[in-house]
Length: 122
Image (tube, rainbow, N blue to C red; front, side, top):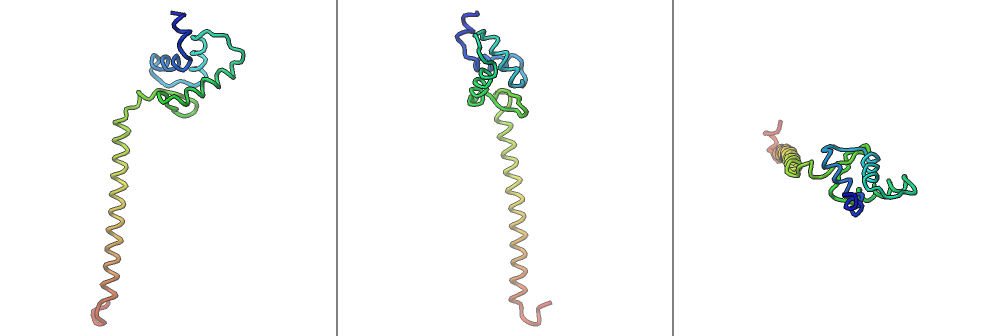
């Protein structure tokens, strides 16, 4: 087992840790745990953490949850986020349609008032 872990990258170990834990983790805790599992000799912990953090940041399987917390993309269903985006688009379209309708009515009223006979004006 140890031989297999040594062949796996720290990023892959971090991914497996998050899958096992099932919740977001602070990046230092996550990376430190992955480095400990890997068991390789480290000259500078800060440099190793920065290196793995960069790799996690570029890996599309991970998602930054804010405040240094990292999770994995598979936890947030795309259907839900897609549905929320569609609902937001619909509400924007609706409010835009209402504004346009009101503007059109105002323009029509001004046109009628401007083109009315002198006796018909208010």
